[in-house]
Length: 293
Image 1: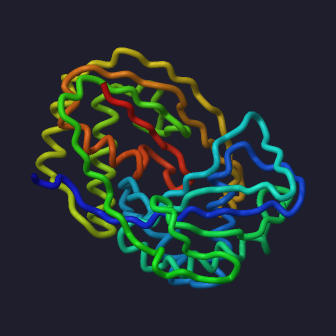
Image 2: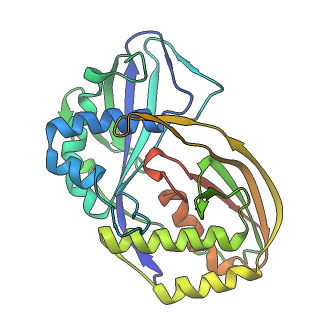
Image 3: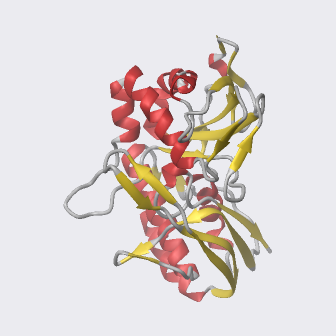
């Protein structure tokens, strides 16, 4: 059966251990991205440039996503209190040609403790790094296990007779249109973002996408009905060291329900659960979970 898209990625499950009782921000995507970038810039400028400064198109065009996604721990209320000895797990997904910098990234994870997390620079140590899917160890207690660095394929799974779906927005979803954050996600909007992101990532970082099928699906999406939309705006801010100011980081959380023949869309919706949807995916924004009927 024809493959609709192809890309490989390396899922790294990183485990940090808290060295003291501390308070952390409720959403750690920005925090983890920042401290990892600080360490990586000191270790390997080439790796930092490729992972953190890639994706810019210029000329007023929207940037391509960078070749990684951070999946932070789940947000918890207004603030998150962490006990000494508590383990903090997060995923760092490297896509396509970004995988070549895995070793530099692993070294950077080991240096996170030198910078600390959050405004209080809370001390954490690196406990271990494992493969995010098969659990094979990659690093633990100073010992590296290279066999664990095994890329996997972006899922292109099919499901027959899918007549509906529930899409859960697990982390804030940010889609902007004409400079404004959209507050409603009809199915064509969702599919257009998924197919466009898949095509842009495979073109930039290695792989391929069936562009004709992507265009066909964008037309077919008009036939899918939204039957439920329970969304709320989660207001977040992050501090930009580059700009020296706080930036709005708000996005939508909640659930969406759709009905219609979703069978041709299934592979793309599965892939989007790895790639994420919308803007600021490197911070872990736009993570979705999809359940089919």
